[in-house]
Image 1 (spheres, helix red, strand yellow):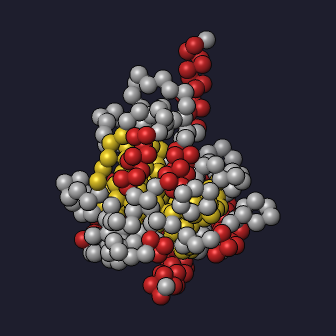
Image 2 (cartoon, rainbow, N blue to C red; image 1 turned 45 degrees about the vertical axis):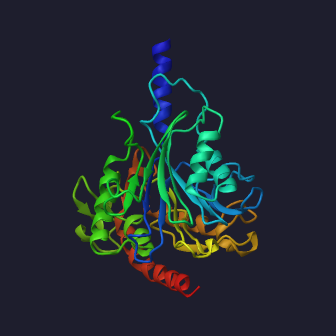
Image 3 (tube, rainbow, N blue to C red; image 1 turned 30 degrees about the vertical axis):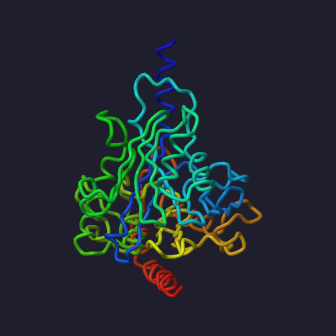
Length: 364
């Protein structure tokens, strides 16, 4: 009986894994001189909204599952002090002897951090002071208005800090994390192919001095490059737009369960923290657009990004409708196949929208 129960639990855990691809870029290496904090979110919660909070020490804007109407869990955001946080789940941080039952509290920790922290140091102090076990197994990425940037590979009882300003750790000014951590030698976790893809993209951009908002939104979060297969679907596939060409779609940075992108462009030391820009893509990266917001008040958040009478964000709803056309096969493993002929034109058409948004950002 115990044997069968173990098998069931393992199968359940596999079904509930929702990876993410994340990165931090030091402001010393970006085109704008401002730090960048990325979370390409993969989750079973397709409907995401933005929410404004003023129930803590600092006001902030964060990404929330639309069904979480009270905003108990926040999956990334930025506050009025220019402090920002994201995470990726890690599946190799928990020691074998850790029998903690408390799990999946990453969204709670990030909300508390946005409420209470003004700096990377504040977040480290928060981790030290919180009651253990934390109920987390994650790579937390944080930046602040002082130019500090770091990952905290965090389990229930301990953490390992990765300072992005350390040239020995980040010789090209960036650090990437998918769904495993580097502090442990355990060969568990997920996202090794996505990590390699992202690393190739960031390395090439660093050589071209192109670590920027535009690069991350267009070339990373919408990448159709596969490092293991050594292909780029934007370049290697020839077809007619009306051909309805289905291909296997696995281990790309955008995935069938990708549901949002958070990209926070922080501020230079000495700039007003409120200028930190929260770029977001709701719904599905290949069928949605990037829109910038700032931490001001609930009233200034665009209506298409917040919950309407249905409880969902209109932009997210529309993006998911278009996403449905990209994955037309509904039976069996059909969700693993994408209609690439409908996918390829989207990044090209959306590029002009991205440029427009960036022009707005530069004029503010």
